[in-house]
Image (tube, rainbow, N blue to C red):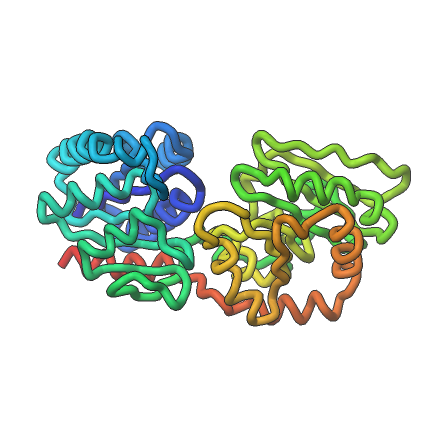
Amino acid sequence: MSRVLLAGGGTAGHTSPLLATADALRRRDPDIEIVAMGTARGLETRVIPAAGYPLELVPPVPLSRSLNLDLLKTPLKVRAAVAAALEVLDRIKPDVVVGFGGYVSVPAYLAARRRAIPIVVHEGNAVPGIANKLGARLTSYVATSFPGSSLPHAVLTGLPIRRLISTLDRAALREEALAHFGLRDDLPTLLVTGGSQGARRLNESVCAAADAFAAAQVQVLHIVGPKGEASPVPIEGGPPYVVVDFVDRMDLAYSAVDAVLCRCGSNTVTEVSGVGLPAIFVPLPIGNGEQAHNAEPVVDAGGAILVSDTELTPRWVREHVPSLLNDESRLAHMSSRASGVIALDGDELLADLIMKAMK
């Protein structure tokens, strides 16, 4: 019986492809044993057990990008985390270790190398993180979500995403989706989302332009995030402006709307373009610039608009977004250009690579 250890966590950017890959492996072999490895500080402590997969925890290893006290402490943290990962590997005895990046992948890669267990690396972003730069040096099995990766041995598989999204028929679900969110069926609809954690800039700028959406007869479905907020001024007789903290049925959210204003993490870019939704991408203004690079293939194809975080002001939203939602021909063109830019079979292609590594 095959055993697979999947290491990844912190945010949905790591946990979502991990779970999609686990499901793809399970579809191929219902008897395969799958165990996830994460840390106590991430989203994985909730979503992985909820998906029915066992989760092992090891200490996180944050890797500083600058010379500071945290960087000097890193060797001690790595040693403790690798020791914890070795204990898990010796107990689970996996045939392969698959890393998706983030704090937990470094000890997973180093422990697997020490035990001579095959390693598979999956990089979700166009610009690789430090953990996967390390992992890619330890294996010839490296998968990437976007073309042009700088990682050695890179094979383009795309990002593993949920079958709920990759097989979505938006038109078939539209009536149910509109009713689910209390939206009208005779108005164009904008979805606003900052990802699993929300985005203050998006929340504030779009909410402040609620009057412009009302004047243009555009309704809004606004997902503010678990700690976010938006309080649009109600317009008597105006179109709906629906604010929710979290949506666990993104298939319904995508089916209810005509365009999306969002961040451009790898999951979001893959899902939004994959289902053919025109997008206004607003990259997170921190990190190594990976979000803007994630969006490039879709923007270059004409399926999305890229707007910087500082540029996304209430004024910009008022001047550009309502008119876009009322331009049916432009939306149709963007939708057709977005569809097919990014493949939606990343889960199956990564499963192929994992099976190959185990042989």
